[in-house]
Length: 288
Figure 1 (spheres, rainbow, N blue to C red):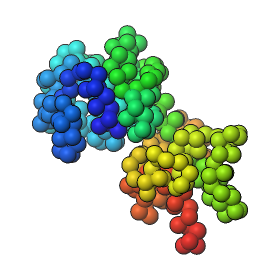
Figure 2 (figure 1 turned 180 degrees about the vertical axis):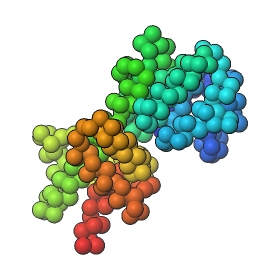
Figure 3 (figure 1 turned 30 degrees about the vertical axis):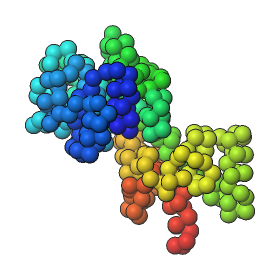
């Protein structure tokens, strides 16, 4: 998602410096007009705002606090925006350390998927001091259509974790319902149209169908390539379970969804889009 987000910033006339451990990702952005940096530390000396988007807690800590990390050379007044989905406590730790160096940090995870990233229609959930929000909002609206201030640092992550837990649950439910309907002899195109004009409608059925042949421009129409990986969904569901345990909050369906996606990873689905849970159900039936 970072690539189309970066391209939208450039398309709106702004100068952009990029860094990624995958050099091919940087090369494609260089062709579009971005300048390249050799490390996060070097990058921070050239910009007034840094936006990061990384896969997990450890990656975020490394990029900000590692040997060549952002906080090694961050300039005073620099705005640091992290759009990763991580534990709220990690965001709070980095925010405190950034403040010690005169920089400001906000967490701003995103929702909407790859297609929304390409079209600039993402939703950003922002956690940070209210007086910093307008500055961040102006930047984030270059990549999204909605920016919501959720509260103090970490609250954006809390909102994203809750959202993705519900997304994981609803995708499993949509795949189950569609698979059952097909087994009962229904045409999947007819069934999904019924769901989307009835009380079962949800984002997973209306925008991101998990069933091949029922919708175009979604991963299920492309052998579940691209989109939001199963391993990332499992990671986010794991964050939700950790938060539920920490706050003694019952999340039985979230727990079942986490178990389901963890099982998919162990069965070769880690790199496929998370909507491949439909394919996973069908495979389990064939093997039973």
